[in-house]
Image 1 (cartoon, rainbow, N blue to C red):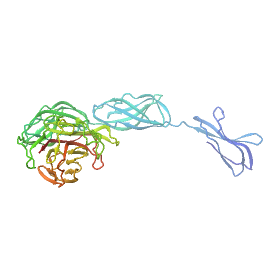
Image 2 (spheres, one colour):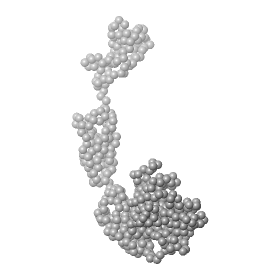
Image 3 (cartoon, one colour):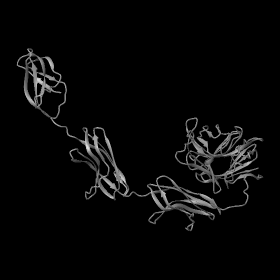
Image 4 (cartoon, rainbow, N blue to C red):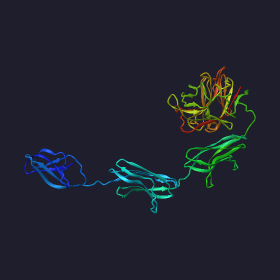
Length: 530
């Protein structure tokens, strides 16, 4: 756009008024938007034309006007210079900023330009302290670069440890090379961090062979010469589990190593995962306590006098279909899954396993969506309902189990009863967010106690819980000691199936589990006395 200011010695009206342009060849390149019938007086007149662009060069520019008679008059000329706008190329991002020694990495360059042009080559340059060229291979050729950012990914290469200068670069079509701003590129060894996620078992019985199991991961991949599970007694003697893994690859994802089996004398031991580096150094992971309890062949008497053992499950072999059903319960609205009562349960028979005389009930996130829209968790349940025996407890029985409480939030283990939509007695319910509390509940003739003991009930620790189904009072026992009698009872003709299971909280009343991951608890036995 041009602006023209004119004045005259006396007022007169021009037919046209504008700004003219001539190139070196005399071609007419006038600004558009000529004004018509404009009065010019001594006080002056300022006018603006329309806009137009010009090629680079030098031009003659002048104002002009047309008299009413038709004659054109040019005003004095001046020079208009149109210069070529400079090309500005901006480096937006440049990576990597760091790398591991001798580990191939690729260069990434993002750049844009003030105006479009085609670069003969674009890449990522690297110089060491001596100025040697260690550029990344494989940049782009004949790459058009405009105002919108363009990303260049090079080929990969590795570097020795050190500090380097790194920069983007491009080559002009005329052959000139242009370097973009430099930044520091550091190649250094990052420390290896190995984490033991789980070491098992936590306990065992005297003389019973058990297998060591270690789950671990590392901050970066490496190959351990040996990975195993170590055990030390009070005197520091080496009682490691046999058959450690050799040349074991360990990366950022969990890997589980199982050892051979061995037995231990009664006592308390220090147990830990360990690994050996390829260079020969041994590394021990954090320790935990491993307890071996004395075995006993004597029959254990219940705390309720006059009762004899009439039914038992010691979990010394696979779950028996004669005693248990692992697939469904009539207590669940849909048989094998249940969106009710703050639960996320979907029964999976594979989630109850037996190892070293212990039943482990585990749960993990499911791909199944419950009718209420929540994601289910696949979990373990066993019940005498629908089993071959169809065993039922009845009025006057005493039932007992030994439980290792879960540690993970969202876990909800329980031993309870059910028959024909009712007859529910909860021997216990447990939630790790209340780590020392057991819920003891009679749903037949309503009564309940929230029983707390910071010594007897702890996450990850074993507790023995029993229930006497009395006609006039249901009594609860913890570690052989009566802790609650409800004075309500179940009546003379009560009977029900046993259920031992791991439920998952939906978060309405207790925290829901945080996946991915596994939630679990364990049972040592279930016994019924009559």
